[in-house]
Length: 288
Ligand SMILES: [Ca+2]
Image 1 (spheres, rainbow, N blue to C red):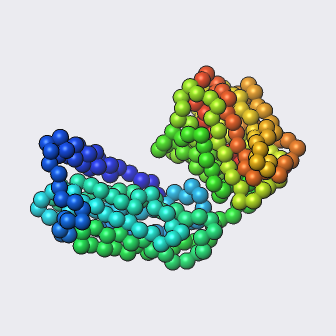
Image 2 (tube, rainbow, N blue to C red):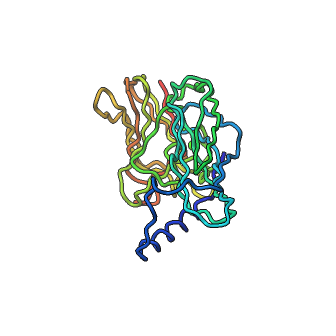
Image 3 (cartoon, rainbow, N blue to C red):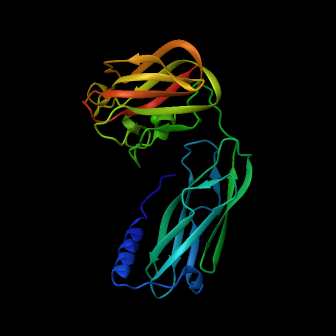
């Protein structure tokens, strides 16, 4: 699902709170406030389907409303059964009368989560809501790509459009750049950056394919990665197993004598537009 909007009321709330603080007005402590009435809770789906892998884009839209005749400042509390994780466990918002805040909530589960039924509890004021969650089987890669469905991390991420997850989502198409299918670091002009995948147990690794940005609008020779090291974590130490220099292609395959590694990363050193950003559309790792 794609998440949209919903943040403006939070910004409004910030302004209201700042105004109250500036005026020396403080409300009663949370525990002393009466239970708020007129609040409503709903979701856009009756049940959330969760695939238990890192980077899965899934969740629901929380609809947090005020049917009262006066504006309120209200909290919604979200709690998920372990081992589910939620992107938000507290939603605090200013709610004008008749207004419903719509807010995306991401739901994830680790890969070893047992398939089955789980639930999310949501409460606000005198309202409670139980949202069923169905966790499915973890998918398995059939192409030999060891980077699929394992945890990915990066030195930094240019969020929300260019997350590290985009570089291991199975989509190599640079024309989809800016649709969260590529990683872009967040430290303009500063190198090195790195992008890493970590295996559940050590794997024999002998080839890394790196797809850098190479679209009609942004060709690799102008915007792609130019120089990088391929590194494998063997024991506790990072070993450089391949070096790429002067690349202008959209995809560069590095093959090397296989090593048994617990993780693989690319350490980026330069891009073709000069000292700006590292951009990876897809990172793939194979036995050989
Ligand atoms: Ca991708």
